[in-house]
Structures are given as structure tokens and as C-alpha cells.
Image: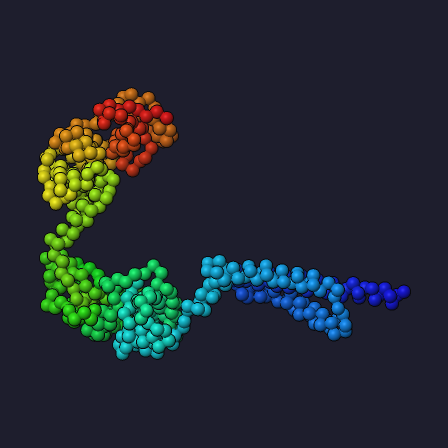
Length: 500
């Protein structure tokens, strides 16, 4: 009887081994999924190791049982469970390989698009930045014409040894496809250049960002002598170049203009002197700046190739054109920060515009005249020399809802009060907007909580049009939004308190 009982126990334990194997297999697949989803190889593999060891032991036991003639009567059911577990967790693992769905996707992306390249031509004096491009080009097919996405940053020591490179380059390959290359090198971390490849997402060809002019600047400039002179003043410094393509320059301090063809088009400007900037204007050309890293005591120098001089008159014309363009696209008004002029164009006709032009200023306040255009801003005519009726301040705004009907506003220098004026004859005459403040019986809750009184509400916001009504909010200051609201249904002839 005792022997028969032992035999029965063994018969029951044999199928139990198969189910334990399935459970352990499920646990291992679950941990593997978590690893692919979250990353952290060391943590998850250490957690999985005990289950793997037990699983291997049980698989060996299962092989021994099979060798001794054990055949499971439920093999098909067992196989179905095994396949189901594999498909469920396998699908979950595959999902983590899809971009942005898990750590596995980043590992795959890194494997496919991240290259490490030996950096041998690492002296800027001997190789320029050509050495960087040549070393990368030996392992990766680069476009013949390269551009910088933002800038090309490179650090080097006094003897020319390159210590750091950071840049995003891109260009079209021989098939016309846009390709991007993110380059990163830090001698403290690795002696190789890290290159990440992409398909040029978010990039477009910009001729002003051509890389070739940087080669030409390094070849034409005397930056080695500049570094040497700096080194005599302070040794053991790190030097850096920053190249961003075409840039504007409006100061001659530390500026050197280099002759030569920077972009290879066979044309270049020569004979220009930095002293040209003394009379105003600016240069626009390919620029690379050289400076000492982490040193504010010594000023940087800039090298400029193929500069174009833009006169003050041209700059002003460009600025004015931009102001007109912005004013026409605005639904209200815009202010020229250069001179304080406030522009608006009528909402129903962008040929007709008005501007409040500063004619005098004193003690933080300004006096304005009103000008009008009927040809989109090509010509302006003075139509009212005193639209604010001798009141001075800072223009709050100007808006015309039609060719003739509009409002102008002026605020005190403190920004705590303002006045609004209305015109119905295209700005020839104005009348002050008077709101029935004496009929206000209550002020906003927010004002009460901080102890405000009705007399504190003196700032009239510019009118807003909604449907067939105009609205004005009276607040305690320029930047406040909570206030007492008024509305008009007859183009500002009469105003009523808006009750909530």
C-alpha cells in the first residue's frame, strides 16, 4: 500500500511540472516586457534571473521524464497555452518596439541611427573643421553640400586640439532626399564622434546656413595669431568658434572683414571697411565668432565674409514695411517700439489706415498727431494735429470699425487712468467718451476684497465690438482685467452698465 501511494504522488507531480513551467515562462515573459517597456536592463534581468534558473531546472526535469517514457495526455492543451502566452506577451513586446511606445524602440533607433566614428583629424590648425567632416564622411555618406540647422560649435586648446564639437548638419543626397546628421564630440567622454542620423524632419534648405563659408573663414582668417596673442595674456584656456551662417552685424568692435568667395558662387564683395558702420546701418554676411570659453574679461572677435552693407535708410524702409504688414494683419492696432507710432487699418478696408504719430515728448508723456492713408500706407496725410485735444500721455490704442467710425485712447504715464475719444468723420474731429460712472452702485467683488472704491476705477479699456454692441471695461489700471463693464447699442452715443 505504501509503495502504491508513492507511485500515485509521482503521477500527480509529473503534470504539475508542466504547469509550473508555464507559470515561470509567463513570469519571465512579463519581466521581459517590462524591460522592453521601461528599460533598466540591470534591474529587470536581476529580477528575472531566479525564475530563469528554476525554469531551466524544471525543463531538465521534464527532459528526464520524457526520456523515461513519460507522455503527457494533455499535450495539445498545454501547447495551446504556451502559444497563447507567447502571442500575448510577444505582441506586447513588439508594441514597445514601435517609436515612442517603449525603451525598446529607443534602443532600436539608437542601433540603426547612432554611429560612433574615430576622430583622428582632431587638430583645427592642421585640418580646420574639414577633419571633422572627413572623418565622419569615411563611415557615413554625407551630402556634397551641407548646411547647419542652428550653428556649428567647436572648442579647441591653444595647440589646436579639438575638445568639443556640437552641430546639426543636413543636406540633400544624390537622390534629392533631405538627410540630417547630429554630431557630438566630447574628448572627456569618448575619443569618437557620435553621429545620429535622421530623415531631415523639420528641416528645409536655407542658403544662408551653408557650411562651406566656415571652411573659407578658417582658411582666410588669422585666428591662430589671435589665439596666440590671447594665450600670452592668459594661458591654459579653452577657445571656441561659433558659426551660424549669415548674420547681421551693426558694430565694428572686434570685427574683421575677409576677402574671398565664401559660398563658391564666384562672387564676393571686397573693399568694404568696418568703419562703414560708424555712420549707421549694418552688414549681413557669413560670420564666425571666436572667443575664450568662460572668460568675460576678453572680448570676442568676429570674422565676416561676403558682407552686404545695408544703409540706415534701407533698414528704416524695411522696418516701416514690416510695421504696415503687421498692422494690416492685426484686428486691432500695433505700436512701433522704435518711435512710439501706433498703427491701425480699418476692419473693412485694408487700404484705409490711421496712425498716431509722436510729435513731441516731455517727462514721460507724448503729444500725438493723427495721419491717414488711403493707399495701404504708401502715402500718409496729416488730418488732425491735436486728436487728444491738448492731453498728453501714452497712446493706449487706436481702432476704426469702418472708414469713418473709430476710437483713440490715451493713458497717463502711471498707467492708472486713461481717456477714450470717439470720431465719426474719419478722425477730423473727436469727442471724449464719458461713461455713466455716477450710476454705478456696486464695484467688482475682487475690488471690494482688497479695499478698492469706485474712485479707483479710472482706466477705460479700448472698445470691443461684439455683435451689434460695443463694450468698454473700466478697471483700476492698465494690466487689470476685472472691472465695471459698459455697453452701447448706438455706436457710442449712449452707454449702459452691464449687469450680471
